[in-house]
Image (cartoon, rainbow, N blue to C red; front, side, top):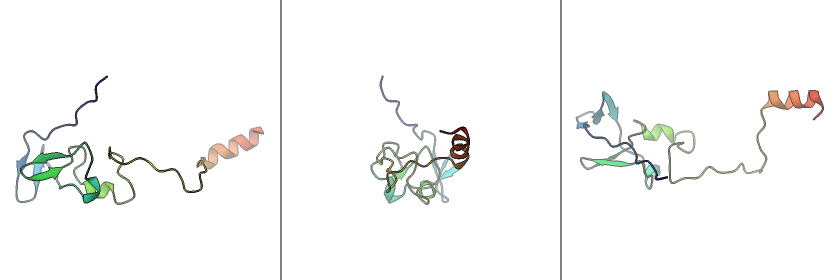
Length: 94
């Protein structure tokens, strides 16, 4: 099965506010986005067709749309367990 190509930004218009695509103002990609397969070049700038504000996706860690970054394992190596599920398991005696 072949990989699906990322959405292109056909019909996007460059304005003073930025690149406008379907009524949404797109911001240029962050330097952390370099290497991502989703980046589309439009009129001399690089934009993410998946998310209008790519810098905001990197504000709290790794962008979940990034194709060039792998998720990291917790430093302790422990798996985080939902506390509600843990209490139910303890009540059943598991």
